[in-house]
Length: 298
Ligand SMILES: [Zn+2]
Image (cartoon, rainbow, N blue to C red; front, top):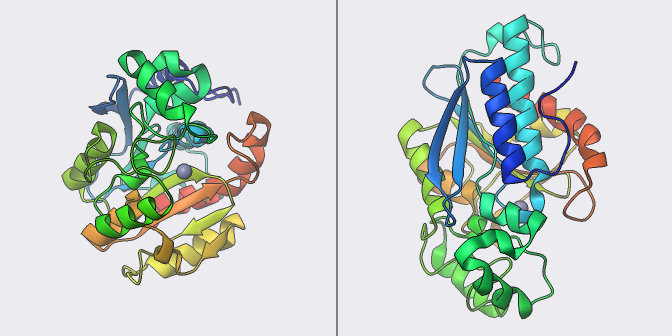
């Protein structure tokens, strides 16, 4: 099969091209804009199916992790192709996937653009980004004003701030700065809004790398979350990380578990150094498609 979502650098332009090509090929997909980034780029959501109780799969939180955006879009394409042609995915009859799937392929489009095309792409924030980057050797992972989106959700805020300060992160940074307040960033707000609107039964945040699955927040373990985590681990070969919550606050998974008490997972795809090379994509896909397909069912 010739895919629309072919492995390539996931620039904002390529992301948009893929989304609009998917819409053209499969008109029954819902394409929405759930918010705008700091630089006014669209944050898209793709919806397959119309029922309540969706699963939300979000990717592209961290600038260097744009291969997650490609994975999310490819998963959308596989589901769409399978539903249109009644072809099983990984042995699963697509007519059995009755609840809707909402995919947010890129939560942090400005960050990804900076990672791929440099600080010029941050528009009026270009100079600020250069200054922030100049004091650190870290690769850029934040949004266009130096806030790490996966540290900006409202979960364990005071503890998170204490941990940042201890690590010497006192303000905008290429990574790990949580912002001046929880949900201060438009990218975070967009995802929080989407969750409050739909009350999803489960969310998955795609990150790279490590081939690991995080499923708790501190000692909070929502009903079903451990069982589902074990299933994900067994079909992907990825490791379950126990008690990860001790070192984690402010993430999308953390907030979702804290706020809704429903299953939420951070899945670290692939292994190596970020950004993972495009040549790793097929292997990652093989490990992740069964897991994402089951997420649509469970
Ligand atoms: Zn990440």
